[in-house]
Length: 298
Image (cartoon, rainbow, N blue to C red; front, top):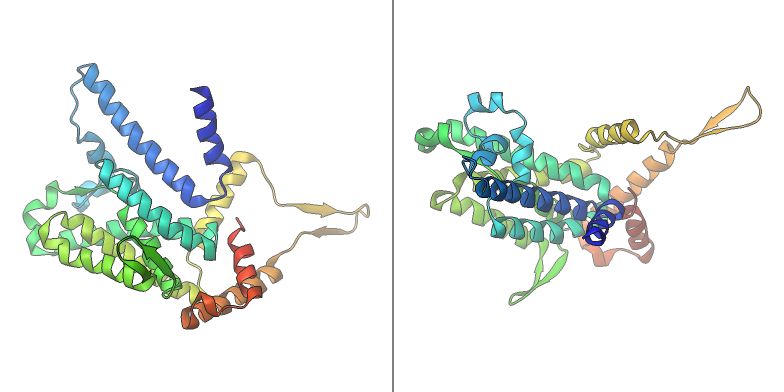
């Protein structure tokens, strides 16, 4: 058992893929909630199976949300069943792998988390304004990572609309058509069940599209969140930025990377524009190598 646990820790800690780490977290939380339910059941402890969803799922009622503000994030890491989490994690892996291949790990987490928040915001907004939901407003809540998953899927399709993948029984499909079908299915499914979930999916999709358009315009919405994460890592690990000192006490140099980063960002923007216009196959060998190296940056 210890060997299995060591293998899991190794895969999580040393994996260079943020997609794999996020999947690990989602699966771990899913299993933990089921274990809690099982132990309480065996101990005959009075327990409502929906209590976890109640306190971690995002409510549609604004007054309830004010007493549980954390749910606007936590709902995105809670799943209602095996099929729910399996479908979400498979979709996240497929689209997340494409996304990080071209933009690296740093851009993934902001899109994913912002997508979850955008899904919750649209869910709450529609439920509080659409007359059809008036009777269920105070009793509705939502769980699931689908809004974050759709944000990644649409972001990847917006970034690489002509990127082609092969689907079993269907054949080659471009990302833009696959993402469009996913969004259309959510739109037409709202009246037929799980309306809150479908609305949240659309909120995540909108976020993914706008995020990439802003990134292509030179506005990185994820910079602030990444800086926050870097600060947190520095606090908890004690790591500091590298400083180089010479023997001359009156002279000190520090490692500076801003000019290089700016040039790399400009080059990346040009390549992404080229991909949008002519597809990935239109890139030169040097441009493809640059994208590969850039995607491996943490």
